[in-house]
Image (cartoon, rainbow over all chains, first blue to last red; front, top):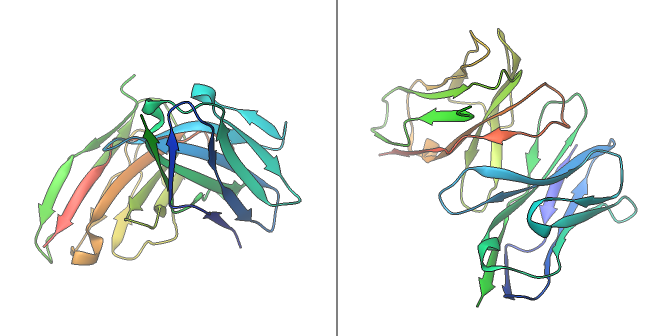
Length: 113
Length: 114
């Protein structure tokens, strides 16, 4: 069985401070992991993905995530938050050949000026 | 490329009515899928297709039908709408079946069932 848990439903940071959005997963197999972002009233856009290559993955807009197998985590970070980062973020897990993606419940990021 | 398009953007139905949500992609993608998004629950997979003529059920398929007669189109049918189907629906596609490919999402359809 697979599942993904996003540990915070809401995160608030001040502009210019670091962002940490936490994601833990459970999977019986080697997973692929993704972070997607959804701006208000928009569709979802891929930020980054891990597919068993380098454990530190760099994405768009300065985001990155580190796959830690021992901790079953895939936390999303950014050194300095920008106002445009305010959005909903989803952690997604899947395994090869299963063709099914499992979404976390989302983390809403607020950036305070 | 238009990417993934969905119609309509908004829809209000009465209980028991039927309708079809349209989804099309012009990227020659093999894999297409439908999700519903409900507050506090993330996105849940309804149905998916790994190619024309092939469909399969996802996590929450009850009350929905799909077909894939062409590579480009993947309509979602509600045969008898229920208030529990009030949600935002997203269609997505990726180049090939297989879970490492990036999914591209449409803008969504907001459905209200009264």
